[in-house]
Image 1 (cartoon, one colour):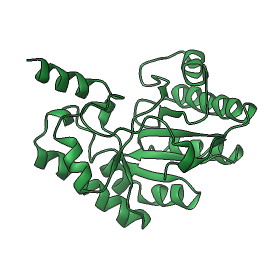
Image 2 (cartoon, rainbow, N blue to C red; image 1 turned 30 degrees about the horizontal axis):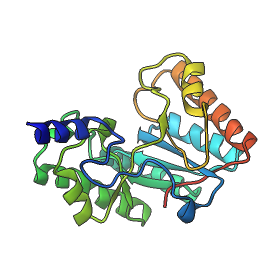
Image 3 (cartoon, one colour; image 1 turned 90 degrees about the vertical axis):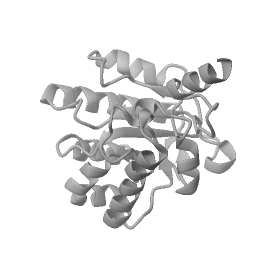
Length: 223
């Protein structure tokens, strides 16, 4: 019973390592001692993502986008632009199923492998990193990632921007005690469809990047 409880708990806690390796911070030896990583899930979004790219360019910052495979296929030219502008495109499943953690090993692999294929086809680069929907996973995921040579990534801190409407609170969650090696999580998906939601998120990204620079840090992509 205790073993089963540990497995369930490990799957429900996105930053837990019980079920296998899980990258929650940047390794200083690999990335340097004055960097952080800004990551975006659930895109690309035809209206929001291009504007995020512009804000990133304004601050000379690079990011990693954990993209949904079917949206990569739908917005191939935008995804190609993301890579051309120096950002990383990583794997966030084919269609972001809410039941992802309950899929069989073959079902998990189908979701991830199909997304690997379309991202490689569109960008010419095979993703190195994977993030599970909402960070929730099953004991079967780690062997699949190992076969596909992918590293699981979660985050150090997140803004909860898909549910929080107050952009100041989102910003504060991301920058409170901001430190070298942090991996920050936001979203550029359908949770931000209205112009107000898009404007609020862009303001958060702008302010976060300003704080990163004020602390003498650099925003770099994974990999």
